[in-house]
Amino acid sequence: MPNGLGAKIRELRQEKGLTIAEVADQAELTVSMLSQVEREIVSPSISSLRRIAAVLNVPAFYFLVEEFRPDEIVVRREERRTYHPSGYNTTFQLLTPSLNKRIETIYFELPPGEATCETPMAHEGEESLTVTSGRLQVVLPDQEIVLETGDSIYFDRYLPHKLINVGEDTASAICAISPPSF
Image (cartoon, rainbow, N blue to C red; front, side, top):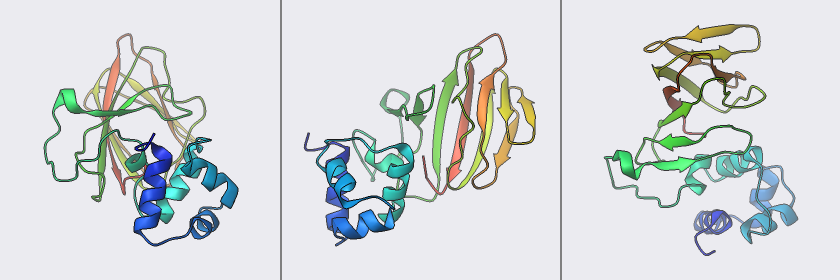
């Protein structure tokens, strides 16, 4: 696959003039592991991909989208790029047309009783989430908060969290994450 995840990592690494050893060292991976990722023999974990992306100064999502079109400013509903990250129980839609800006916006839906992930997860950056329909319970390390349609919440850096649909209908939300890290 010439346009796969590994090829994108290798291409960007080479564009930035970095050796595989330099990226592996900074991303806390072995050279062998990064080589296998670039050759698409193995897939990196989400945490490994985030570390590789950080070294290459791009959001992890950059490597996962099917087509990167940085010059566009509009994302039509039918053209949204989707992503189903490992460890998550839902599919996210990218609402931001370009991943090389300071903010990333995503949309997701969650069926009744479902959680975004089994274990609360943290990610780099700050996040603001607005419930666009339904009821979502936000599970934080020391509290649980129920949000109704129209309610918003803000997560500080690295705060582990997960969302559970506690309503009777499908819930949906829009998240803004800065810097892009998903």
